[in-house]
Each structure stands twice: as structure tokens, then as C-alpha cells.
Length: 286
Image (tube, rainbow, N blue to C red; front, side):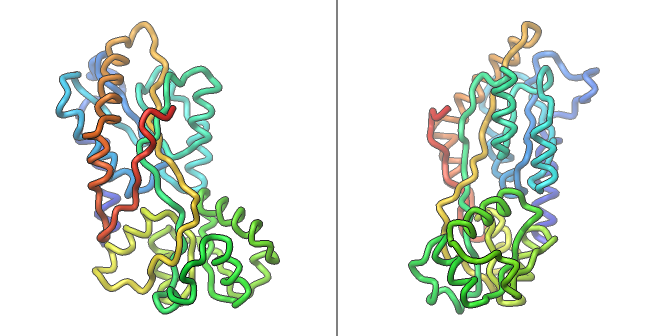
């Protein structure tokens, strides 16, 4: 129920700033156009709060649009997104999209706004047995003891990172463990399933925070360990054209505000499920 509320709230992010038409009929030429692409529901909620920084600036109207979510298919498709001549700022957790913008000469600058860690979650009763183990060691123990493990193959970041951790653990192919399960569910639904079956699962800490919040203080899973693998959501400033110099100047004002200590306070004060799954990106790191 709560996750549905979060998704709905995140969707509202891209409607509340302006009621202007995206057909370009009623949108003033000076309106700053922002897109978010390949971000999780929790990330979208944080962006909603960061959008409030616009209220403190006198830069005219702002419009937002969601391009894609954070599923494997969406992330692959988002790397093909053509933002030239349309958006002034793009927030994305897809590094391929950032690289593509740079290769095309469309990227003026790119800054890490916040990041989240890939974590291992599992039954509370197993936390002590895994105490002190990180990433590879924990995965090796899960496999050797034939623990139930759920693989999020629909989440590209989780799936790719998991494959790398299995490779580093030097165990047999995960499928040879009869308790290895490929889940087709979304992150939070898969966490609930893993909790019901006493399994382990690798996923972003933001999704785990959503899960904790949805369980009403009585979760069946806990955070077992971190992995040292992070995903960044970056703010990309798109190259300007002659007809939108005013929009470019406004985008720069917002970027400066977002990268200020006040913007960092918004990231650091975010809370969901009794925790903050996000860390501030390195200021000024292009």
C-alpha cells in the first residue's frame, strides 16, 4: 500500500511544477525543462524534495517529465533517449545515458547529486552468522551453505553487480544451487517474498528502505552487509543552443543551488523506513 503511495507521489513530481503543455504551445521559451530518467521510486521522492529548491530562485517557470524507470528494459531504453533541443537538465541513474550525452557533445557538465549502495538483505536470524562478512565472502557462504537466494534479474544494476560478485567469489554457476531463484517481481515485492521464504537478496538500499517502511516496523529481513558497490544519480546539464540561452542561465542557477550546502542538507535529511539510503555525491566532481 505504502509503496503504491510513493510511486503515485513520485509521479506527481513531474506534474506539480507546471501545468504547461509539453506540446510547446503554452510553455514559455524561458521555462527550464527538466527530465528524470532511470531512477527508482525512492530516488524520485528525493528529487521531489530537491525540486523545492527552485522555489527559492527567481528563474521563471519549470517543467518536469519522467522518461523511464529503473527496470532493466527501461534503463536500456533510456540510453537511447534523445534529449537534445528538449531538456536543459537531466537527472539520471543510468551511466550509459551520461556517456552517450558526452559522446554526442551534448553534455556541458555532470555532477553526482546522491548515491546509494547495493546491499545484501537476509533473515534477521542469520545476521550474527554473517557478521563481519562483506560482499564476496557473504555470497560465497550463501552458496556453499545452499541458502535461499533471490536474484533480481529485472533490475539491471542489481543483476550486473550480482554477476560480478559471483565471479569474484569463485563459486560454481549460481544456478547449480537448487535454492537459487530468479525473481520476476519488483524490488519491494521480491523482498517480501524473500522474507516469507527466509532468503537472501541483493538490491539497492533505497528499495530496502521502501520495504522497511511498508512493513510497519516488523520486517522479516534485515540488512546483512554492504557490498561497496554504489549507483550515482547525476545531474546532467545539457549543451545550450542560441534560442534557449535564458533557460541555460536559469539551469545554471539551479545547479549552483543544488550543489550548495543547502542542497546537501536536503539529501542528508531524507528518511524512509527509519533510515537514509542516500549519500551525497562528491561536490564539484564532474
